[in-house]
Image (cartoon, rainbow, N blue to C red; front, side, top):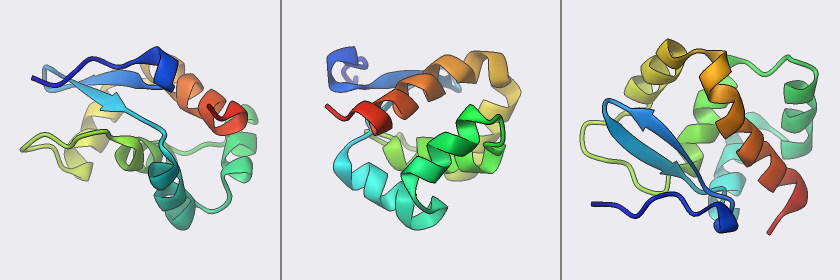
Length: 104
């Protein structure tokens, strides 16, 4: 069993297929996300302007996963996030974006 998300570390959790996936915006995770998505500040600006795509959200979440459970692929994550809807994703995304801006 994996440890729950630790908000003091900037972690958040998202439930996929009955399992809480912990997202940790570590330096390594953010560098990987930036390599795929471009500068993180621009990503935050797109989010604030309401122009962050689902694909970008999935990519950010994927790179920030603390652990990837067996059977969870990026496609599975994307399908689960799409099924959740923006209203449920927004608080989790807000935590990650806040960590990007504020740091630890």
